[in-house]
Length: 314
Ligand SMILES: [Zn+2]
Image (cartoon, helix red, strand yellow):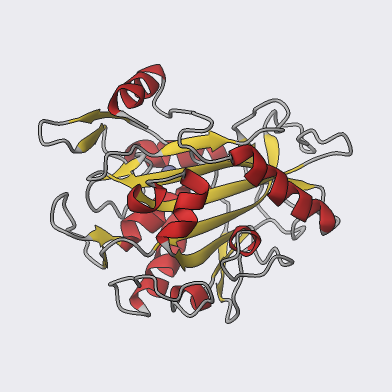
């Protein structure tokens, strides 16, 4: 996406929605994913993806709604006690420690994260605890721990390992994938600019429309998958600032888990005189990463509370 388009998109709204932002056939991708889900006998389709970019890239984070998504609805929430998921009150999350340990097939010849193995897994668990600890909501984020096996449906469909048959949790951190994966979903340049991505899947009825079984006016989320790009100098640095040559993984993971819990992007972007993307006001849910942000406060807190304040207690 060029700068002019970026500015137009951000002027139109804090969260630019541009189908086919890059030269990649997203329709074919959605068809492929949805045919796969149908082959599993599941009334589930992919609905949208949200990705965050490095503020030092010339790309701006995006929300991409796939085709065939009925009413183009962006608001999707999990339904408490949804029998199509666990039937439980909690939101379950999992960490794919296999991909996080960079051992997946398809990674050969690709760069690996600079962050020490183990520190990255800890960062994923830490952000789950951070969101779980937000007090305005009774929604429990139950961290199921490390998977011990290679998981991830989207990566499997695109040929990057994973497991195409298992929905392991409501939200999963499915580890690091090479930049070619991000080129495949974001188009040329995706691998160079996209730090991480969250895919949201929705439940559909027999006619292919989104469902709303709890009649809350918000379509029902089925599950979400999160992936991170190996192509960046990931660090464990709570003092990460723009231009320091590192990207704090926990900050980006907190952002992705925010998507996992139904938050969208927030903030307006512009390019400063050094050609860097600046987004204000600063929030975890900014569409581009500028500096460390490990806490849920301000607009992040407000968004979470408005989404989940009415979640029933067990
Ligand atoms: Zn995002």
